Image (cartoon, rainbow, N blue to C red; front, side, top):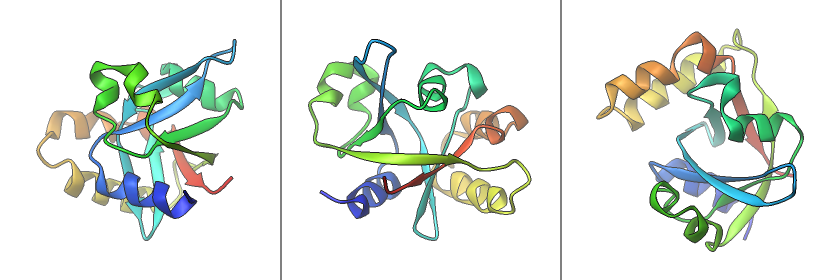
Length: 136
């Protein structure tokens, strides 16, 4: 597997499973949305800095993505952990970075069927929790 596989999954899959670690090292899968702009994947914490997956990332814990349909994590987090996965690194994207408009554009197109959720993902709180996914 390679980082290109992660980019492909994040681009083509509506719900992805981000895998982070709790303080005790236990891996946990969380279903989230991802947007890819010009070949670069981005994430936002829909619920801002209080989302536990986002707190794990900010704490510097390992981050991976399951290389499969992340909707499995909505009903069976353990099954999502059994999918092949790939480690990534992330970096914060400032709220005023011009890429935020492009992320919004991709968000609107990819998740058009869910306008209420899109509104949450475009809130100031969520935009302030935007991450760029990069190769480790």
